[in-house]
Amino acid sequence: MPDDTSDQQNIRHAVRLNPILVPKASDVLAEELRERILHGEFPEGTALPPERDLVTQTRMSRTTVREALRILEVQGLVTIRAGRTGGAFVQRPGGESVADSVALVIRGQQIRMAALMETREAIEPNCAELAARYRSEEDLTRIDAANEALAAEEDSLAEFLQANIDWHIAVATATHNELLSGFMLAISRAIYAATDNQSFVDAEVRRTTVLAHKSITKAIRDRDPVAAARRMKRHVHAYAEAIQEIDERTEIVIPA
Ligand SMILES: [Zn+2]
Image 1 (cartoon, rainbow, N blue to C red):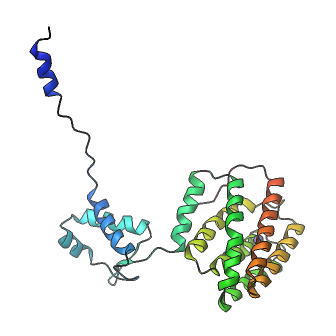
Image 2 (cartoon, rainbow, N blue to C red):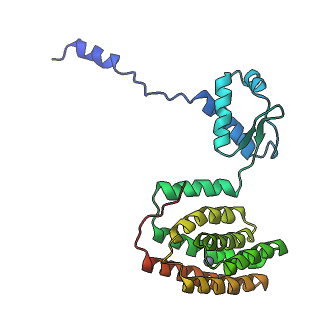
Image 3 (cartoon, helix red, strand yellow):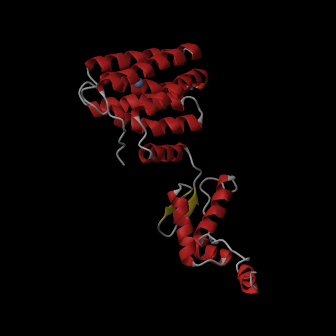
C-alpha cells in the first residue's frame, strides 16, 4: 500500500514552468521601429529623433537605443550619418536588400550550379517578356549601353562578364518590378562568379552572347513579348548547357 509521502512528492512536482525567453530590449525597440518603417509610417529620409530623445521617449538605456539603431542599420532600414547634422535616417528597403539576402542564401546553403541555372531559366524569360511590355526609352538606353560594352570588350574577361551581367540586370530593371530586378541583381553576383572562367568564355561564347543579346534587345524594343521570352529562354538555356559541359563544380563561391 503506497504511503502518502509519494503523493506529496507528486503535488510538489505538479507545477511546472518552461524556460521563459525574455527578448532583448534592443530587439524589441528595433522591431517596433522596423514595423513602423515597413508600414510606411515614416517616409524615406525621415530623421529619427536624436539618441537622447529616444532614450527619454522609450525609457530605455542609451546602449539599448544605440544597439537598436545598429540593428536597423544592418537591416538596411536606416542610414546613420555622423556629424552635427547627422543621425539615423529612414531608408525603405529596395532591390539591394533582396540582393543581399539572396546572396547570403546562395553562400550559406552552398547552392549548386544547376540550381542557379534552373532559377535563371525560370525567371529570365519572364523578365524579357515583361521588359518588352513595360520598357521605357531610358531602359532601352541602359540595355543598349550594356550591349555596346559587351561587343567592344575583346580582352578583359572581367569587363566582358560585367557587361554581360549589366545587360541582364538592365532587362530585369525594364520589367519595373522591384522584386524581379532585386532578385536578378542577387543572382547576377552568383552568375558572375559561376562564369568567371577563362576557358569557358572563349571567342565563340562571346560571339554567340553578343548575337543573342542583340536579338532579345530587338524584341524588347519592338514590344514583342513572345519573341523576347522565347529568345531569352534559348539564350539562358544554351549558356547553362555550355557551363555544365565544361564545369563540374557543384558549388558556387561568391566573393564576399
Ligand atoms: Zn547573357
